[in-house]
Each structure stands twice: as C-alpha cells, then as structure tokens.
Image (cartoon, rainbow, N blue to C red; front, side, top):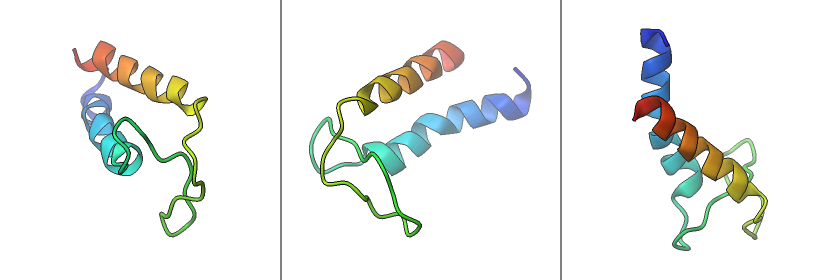
Amino acid sequence: MDQRGAEEARGDPVWLERHYLSHPVAGGWYDAFDGEGRSTVATIPASSFYHVLCAASEAEAVLG
C-alpha cells in the first residue's frame, strides 16, 4: 500500500465513527443520509451491520 492509501485507511475508521456510528442508541448506526447530511431513516436496518463489520475488519487487517 502506498503512503496515500495508508493515510486514507487510517482516516476511514474516524470517518465511519463520525458519520455513521455516532448514534444516540448505543451500538446503533445511521444508515442513509440526504444531501444535507440528515438521516433519512428512523430505523436501524440489521442488514447494514454486515457492512459495518466488514469495514471494521478491513481496517483492522490493514492497520493492525
């Protein structure tokens, strides 16, 4: 991985936390947003957990 790729990989977990995982329900996440950055759904779709878990797993694999 080049230096730019490594910097992006280090920033991804921070971005994920800030935009998707900063939810008022512990262990919850935001799933979809409008153009203004507001959540467009009132539920937490269980199917999204797969993608959240994969992102965390990839970050761990790349960043150690």
